[in-house]
Length: 259
Image (tube, rainbow, N blue to C red; front, side, top):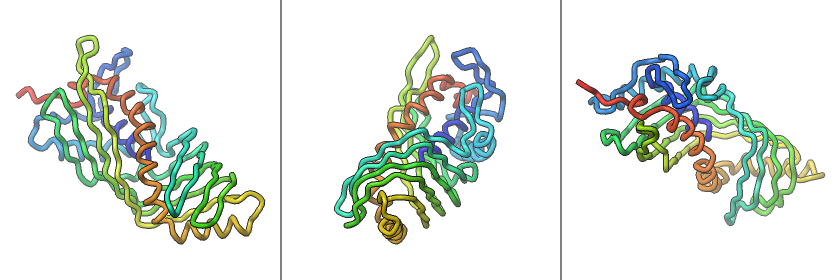
Protein backbone atom coordinates (compact mmCIF):
# COMPACT_ATOMS: atom_id res chain seq x y z
CA UNK A 1 0.00 0.00 0.00
CA UNK A 2 2.92 2.36 -0.59
CA UNK A 3 0.92 4.18 -3.22
CA UNK A 4 -1.70 5.39 -0.73
CA UNK A 5 0.90 7.58 0.96
CA UNK A 6 2.23 8.86 -2.35
CA UNK A 7 -1.30 9.72 -3.44
CA UNK A 8 -1.88 11.69 -0.23
CA UNK A 9 1.35 13.62 -0.63
CA UNK A 10 0.61 14.48 -4.23
CA UNK A 11 -2.63 15.99 -3.00
CA UNK A 12 -0.70 17.94 -0.34
CA UNK A 13 1.56 19.41 -3.00
CA UNK A 14 -1.40 20.62 -5.01
CA UNK A 15 -2.95 22.37 -2.01
CA UNK A 16 -0.53 25.23 -2.61
CA UNK A 17 -2.21 28.10 -4.45
CA UNK A 18 -0.19 28.83 -7.60
CA UNK A 19 2.98 27.75 -5.78
CA UNK A 20 6.27 28.68 -7.42
CA UNK A 21 8.52 25.67 -7.02
CA UNK A 22 12.30 25.82 -7.12
CA UNK A 23 12.76 24.82 -10.75
CA UNK A 24 10.68 27.82 -11.83
CA UNK A 25 7.49 25.91 -12.68
CA UNK A 26 4.18 27.12 -11.37
CA UNK A 27 1.52 24.82 -10.01
CA UNK A 28 -2.04 25.53 -11.18
CA UNK A 29 -4.51 26.86 -8.63
CA UNK A 30 -6.57 23.84 -7.59
CA UNK A 31 -8.00 25.07 -4.31
CA UNK A 32 -7.38 27.64 -1.61
CA UNK A 33 -4.71 26.43 0.84
CA UNK A 34 -5.59 25.53 4.42
CA UNK A 35 -4.12 28.04 6.90
CA UNK A 36 -2.06 26.09 9.38
CA UNK A 37 -3.13 28.10 12.45
CA UNK A 38 -6.85 28.14 11.63
CA UNK A 39 -9.06 26.53 14.25
CA UNK A 40 -10.48 23.99 11.77
CA UNK A 41 -7.26 23.21 9.89
CA UNK A 42 -7.87 19.45 10.23
CA UNK A 43 -11.38 19.72 8.79
CA UNK A 44 -10.14 21.92 5.95
CA UNK A 45 -7.34 19.50 5.09
CA UNK A 46 -9.67 16.50 5.18
CA UNK A 47 -12.09 18.20 2.78
CA UNK A 48 -9.32 19.39 0.48
CA UNK A 49 -7.60 16.01 0.30
CA UNK A 50 -10.85 14.29 -0.53
CA UNK A 51 -11.52 16.80 -3.30
CA UNK A 52 -8.05 16.48 -4.85
CA UNK A 53 -7.36 12.76 -4.62
CA UNK A 54 -9.71 11.58 -7.42
CA UNK A 55 -8.24 14.26 -9.68
CA UNK A 56 -4.59 13.38 -9.15
CA UNK A 57 -5.06 9.64 -8.98
CA UNK A 58 -5.84 9.87 -12.71
CA UNK A 59 -4.02 13.00 -13.90
CA UNK A 60 -0.94 13.28 -11.65
CA UNK A 61 0.93 16.61 -11.49
CA UNK A 62 3.12 17.07 -14.58
CA UNK A 63 4.79 20.13 -12.99
CA UNK A 64 6.23 17.84 -10.30
CA UNK A 65 6.91 14.93 -12.67
CA UNK A 66 4.19 12.89 -10.94
CA UNK A 67 2.25 10.65 -13.31
CA UNK A 68 -1.09 8.92 -12.83
CA UNK A 69 -1.36 7.07 -9.51
CA UNK A 70 -4.28 4.80 -10.32
CA UNK A 71 -2.85 2.44 -11.29
CA UNK A 72 0.31 2.94 -9.25
CA UNK A 73 3.41 1.29 -10.72
CA UNK A 74 6.27 -0.15 -8.67
CA UNK A 75 9.23 -1.38 -10.67
CA UNK A 76 10.75 -3.68 -8.08
CA UNK A 77 10.38 -4.55 -4.41
CA UNK A 78 12.39 -7.08 -2.37
CA UNK A 79 11.00 -8.44 0.91
CA UNK A 80 12.64 -10.69 3.50
CA UNK A 81 10.55 -12.28 6.27
CA UNK A 82 11.10 -14.82 9.02
CA UNK A 83 8.78 -16.38 11.60
CA UNK A 84 7.82 -19.86 12.82
CA UNK A 85 4.94 -19.97 10.30
CA UNK A 86 6.52 -18.17 7.34
CA UNK A 87 10.06 -17.48 6.19
CA UNK A 88 11.92 -16.68 3.02
CA UNK A 89 12.40 -13.86 0.57
CA UNK A 90 10.42 -12.64 -2.40
CA UNK A 91 11.16 -10.27 -5.25
CA UNK A 92 8.17 -8.51 -6.79
CA UNK A 93 8.52 -6.82 -10.18
CA UNK A 94 6.30 -4.76 -12.50
CA UNK A 95 3.65 -4.36 -9.81
CA UNK A 96 0.47 -2.41 -10.53
CA UNK A 97 -1.96 -1.32 -7.79
CA UNK A 98 -5.52 -0.45 -8.81
CA UNK A 99 -8.27 1.21 -6.79
CA UNK A 100 -6.40 4.01 -5.05
CA UNK A 101 -8.62 6.65 -6.62
CA UNK A 102 -11.48 5.40 -4.44
CA UNK A 103 -9.68 6.26 -1.18
CA UNK A 104 -11.85 7.98 1.43
CA UNK A 105 -10.34 10.31 4.02
CA UNK A 106 -11.87 9.37 7.38
CA UNK A 107 -10.03 11.75 9.73
CA UNK A 108 -7.05 14.11 9.92
CA UNK A 109 -5.03 14.95 13.03
CA UNK A 110 -2.17 17.40 13.04
CA UNK A 111 0.45 19.20 15.09
CA UNK A 112 1.29 22.01 12.74
CA UNK A 113 1.29 25.34 14.63
CA UNK A 114 5.08 25.33 15.07
CA UNK A 115 6.56 26.45 11.70
CA UNK A 116 9.69 24.38 12.40
CA UNK A 117 7.89 21.04 12.77
CA UNK A 118 5.18 19.05 11.07
CA UNK A 119 3.21 16.04 12.27
CA UNK A 120 0.23 14.70 10.35
CA UNK A 121 -1.87 11.59 10.79
CA UNK A 122 -4.49 10.68 8.20
CA UNK A 123 -7.01 7.84 8.57
CA UNK A 124 -8.29 6.41 5.29
CA UNK A 125 -10.46 3.68 3.82
CA UNK A 126 -10.40 1.92 0.45
CA UNK A 127 -13.17 -0.53 -0.49
CA UNK A 128 -10.99 -2.64 -2.81
CA UNK A 129 -7.36 -2.64 -3.95
CA UNK A 130 -6.07 -4.99 -6.65
CA UNK A 131 -2.35 -5.69 -7.00
CA UNK A 132 -0.79 -7.75 -9.76
CA UNK A 133 2.67 -8.36 -11.14
CA UNK A 134 5.51 -10.88 -11.25
CA UNK A 135 7.22 -12.62 -8.35
CA UNK A 136 10.20 -14.81 -7.61
CA UNK A 137 10.47 -16.36 -4.17
CA UNK A 138 11.93 -19.05 -1.98
CA UNK A 139 11.22 -20.16 1.57
CA UNK A 140 8.28 -21.92 3.16
CA UNK A 141 4.64 -21.42 4.13
CA UNK A 142 3.98 -23.59 7.17
CA UNK A 143 5.72 -26.85 6.28
CA UNK A 144 5.33 -26.34 2.52
CA UNK A 145 8.62 -25.37 0.81
CA UNK A 146 8.32 -22.57 -1.72
CA UNK A 147 10.68 -22.01 -4.65
CA UNK A 148 9.18 -20.63 -7.79
CA UNK A 149 8.44 -17.66 -9.99
CA UNK A 150 5.33 -16.60 -11.79
CA UNK A 151 2.61 -13.99 -11.75
CA UNK A 152 0.33 -12.98 -8.90
CA UNK A 153 -2.92 -11.16 -8.27
CA UNK A 154 -4.01 -10.07 -4.79
CA UNK A 155 -7.37 -8.43 -4.12
CA UNK A 156 -7.79 -6.73 -0.74
CA UNK A 157 -11.22 -5.68 0.53
CA UNK A 158 -12.19 -3.06 3.13
CA UNK A 159 -8.71 -1.65 3.60
CA UNK A 160 -8.41 0.74 6.55
CA UNK A 161 -5.26 2.51 7.57
CA UNK A 162 -3.53 5.38 9.32
CA UNK A 163 -0.72 7.22 7.61
CA UNK A 164 1.73 9.25 9.71
CA UNK A 165 4.51 11.61 8.76
CA UNK A 166 6.83 13.86 10.73
CA UNK A 167 9.13 16.53 9.41
CA UNK A 168 11.51 19.32 10.40
CA UNK A 169 12.00 22.63 8.63
CA UNK A 170 15.12 23.44 6.64
CA UNK A 171 16.06 26.64 4.82
CA UNK A 172 17.09 26.67 1.17
CA UNK A 173 17.80 29.94 -0.67
CA UNK A 174 15.95 31.91 1.97
CA UNK A 175 12.81 29.73 1.79
CA UNK A 176 11.56 27.30 4.43
CA UNK A 177 10.92 23.73 3.29
CA UNK A 178 9.79 20.76 5.33
CA UNK A 179 12.07 17.72 5.18
CA UNK A 180 10.18 14.51 5.97
CA UNK A 181 12.17 12.41 8.45
CA UNK A 182 9.67 9.74 9.55
CA UNK A 183 6.95 8.00 7.56
CA UNK A 184 4.72 5.24 8.86
CA UNK A 185 1.55 3.38 7.98
CA UNK A 186 -0.68 0.95 9.84
CA UNK A 187 -3.09 -1.19 7.83
CA UNK A 188 -5.92 -3.60 8.39
CA UNK A 189 -7.81 -5.60 5.76
CA UNK A 190 -11.28 -7.06 5.92
CA UNK A 191 -10.69 -9.87 3.43
CA UNK A 192 -8.11 -10.96 0.88
CA UNK A 193 -8.06 -13.23 -2.15
CA UNK A 194 -4.70 -14.47 -3.46
CA UNK A 195 -3.84 -15.97 -6.83
CA UNK A 196 -0.35 -16.98 -7.98
CA UNK A 197 1.14 -19.31 -10.56
CA UNK A 198 4.04 -21.70 -10.19
CA UNK A 199 4.69 -21.14 -6.49
CA UNK A 200 6.63 -24.41 -6.50
CA UNK A 201 8.63 -24.92 -9.68
CA UNK A 202 7.53 -27.87 -11.75
CA UNK A 203 4.73 -29.02 -9.46
CA UNK A 204 1.22 -27.74 -10.23
CA UNK A 205 -0.24 -29.93 -7.45
CA UNK A 206 2.07 -28.56 -4.73
CA UNK A 207 1.66 -25.04 -6.10
CA UNK A 208 -2.11 -25.36 -5.72
CA UNK A 209 -1.66 -26.73 -2.19
CA UNK A 210 0.50 -23.76 -1.24
CA UNK A 211 -2.00 -21.34 -2.79
CA UNK A 212 -4.90 -22.95 -0.91
CA UNK A 213 -2.92 -22.65 2.33
CA UNK A 214 -2.15 -18.98 1.62
CA UNK A 215 -5.83 -18.17 1.03
CA UNK A 216 -6.96 -20.10 4.11
CA UNK A 217 -4.43 -18.42 6.41
CA UNK A 218 -3.99 -15.08 4.65
CA UNK A 219 -4.56 -13.06 7.85
CA UNK A 220 -1.76 -14.85 9.68
CA UNK A 221 0.53 -14.29 6.68
CA UNK A 222 -0.52 -10.63 6.48
CA UNK A 223 0.22 -10.02 10.16
CA UNK A 224 3.64 -11.68 9.87
CA UNK A 225 4.62 -9.71 6.78
CA UNK A 226 3.35 -6.29 7.89
CA UNK A 227 6.40 -5.29 10.00
CA UNK A 228 8.68 -6.12 7.06
CA UNK A 229 6.38 -4.30 4.65
CA UNK A 230 6.30 -1.23 6.91
CA UNK A 231 10.09 -1.13 7.02
CA UNK A 232 10.30 -1.30 3.24
CA UNK A 233 7.44 1.19 2.98
CA UNK A 234 9.45 3.94 4.66
CA UNK A 235 12.52 3.29 2.52
CA UNK A 236 10.46 3.61 -0.66
CA UNK A 237 8.10 6.44 0.23
CA UNK A 238 10.24 8.88 2.22
CA UNK A 239 12.41 9.87 -0.80
CA UNK A 240 9.28 10.22 -2.95
CA UNK A 241 7.56 12.39 -0.35
CA UNK A 242 10.61 14.63 -0.04
CA UNK A 243 10.56 15.15 -3.79
CA UNK A 244 7.30 16.98 -3.15
CA UNK A 245 7.99 18.70 0.17
CA UNK A 246 11.44 19.94 -0.85
CA UNK A 247 10.09 21.49 -4.04
CA UNK A 248 7.19 23.54 -2.65
CA UNK A 249 7.96 26.09 0.11
CA UNK A 250 6.22 25.22 3.37
CA UNK A 251 4.52 28.62 3.69
CA UNK A 252 2.88 28.01 0.31
CA UNK A 253 1.73 24.50 1.17
CA UNK A 254 0.30 25.45 4.57
CA UNK A 255 0.50 29.25 4.93
CA UNK A 256 0.01 30.95 8.28
CA UNK A 257 -3.15 32.97 8.77
CA UNK A 258 -2.10 36.60 8.49
CA UNK A 259 -5.32 38.00 9.97
